[in-house]
Image 1 (spheres, rainbow, N blue to C red):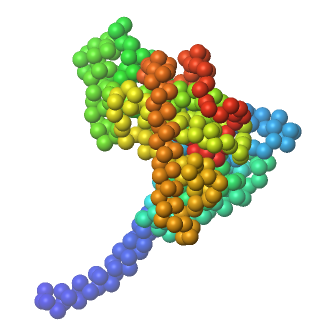
Image 2: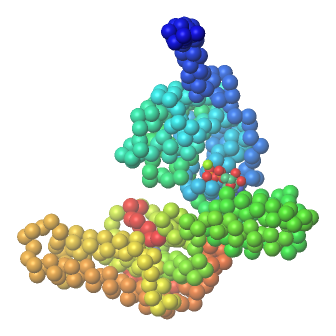
Image 3: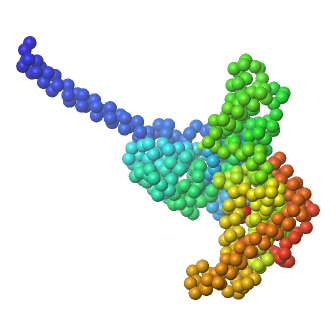
Length: 503
Ligand code: ADP
Ligand code: MG
Ligand code: ZN
């Protein structure tokens, strides 16, 4: 056939097939889109088949479980609470580092309360086409309302809830977040729907999410302490044949800083080690190998060394002992060397009573409590670390206020000496700064003197912290039963709630 006829024929073919190809292409694209659409009656919006996870499977987070038990009680017998006019906990946010068991807790909660459980990971919304994330949220809530009592769980909330100023924020996220806010605001507290969220970092979340009536109940899920780690290991070795040389308490002691997910990983790796060697039982050696492997995989994460642990223990012990020495000014609730967020360890002081008025002596006592962490480092190790930066910031601020605003220095008393007062002479300013420094220096010297005097108590608390990692008030009271308060303020009743507490 000649060229012209060939072209003719090719044109014919194209004319016949092109529409068909185009049509198929359109059908294919539509089909792909539908893949992402919420399937109105299919699995996506059915309650997730009730999980088999129970409270027993979540270990080492007893305080969190206690807080959530309230929700379980409510969902089980809502009438009992409604009758009393009680408002239901509506929006609960679990927050804490990855792997501490937030998702696990939500599943267990759903199971324990017998409520319909709707779970969605927010990271899935972000991948959707325009408007679909918002649509999915709307359907999720509509469905949950129909099936009440129900729990709507939005996991990985950071994915849609990141503060809007953050980079990489797009319109789709914005729409999804807005829809979520609308839904949170939209249902009354009489509806038996509890909304739960999980997030790794509270600080990064859009503040709009945390407002009253939304995720206003925030529950911290912190990494486990040594007893918690042992309990988690027990959960994850349940049903696994262990050789008689395996000591879970030893493994727990060697895994400071690791989360539940890491420990689950260790238990699994140990079983694999043993299996590869065709053993009938898992030996301690298998756990050692597993620990090495898991910890090596975590190099980017901080694992506190033994030496650092000792310093931390003395630092926190210093705070605890000083709080007791200062009477009931700043009662210690808990001291711990388990890191939380950026703080490596912390001592939690809880006010016994709200107060607004403080004597100069009480404020100086407070400064000693703030400075006692660093003072303990100085007394015991002869040198100080950078671990006290937060404490120092608070002391500096307190001393500044005492001199600049409260007129509490010896040399320039009964005057305010505010930084923005340009009428102050250079000499007065110098004196003012000197007085501020003198207040903190004196408090630090006094803190050192007191801790040297009570060195035995300091050692006792530090040792207990090294062993148990967390000490609650009762344990501290027992350890420090013989301490006589050395506070300079004669009568102390309580402390101001707004005062920041030492790390
Ligand atoms: P998160 O949601 O906080 O990142 P997950 O709940 O997904 O952590 O935890 C991952 C896995 O780690 C869980 O499935 C469980 O096997 C284990 N795990 C984590 N925390 C705990 C815990 N407190 N008790 C028992 N197992 C835990
Ligand atoms: Mg999770
Ligand atoms: Zn401190």
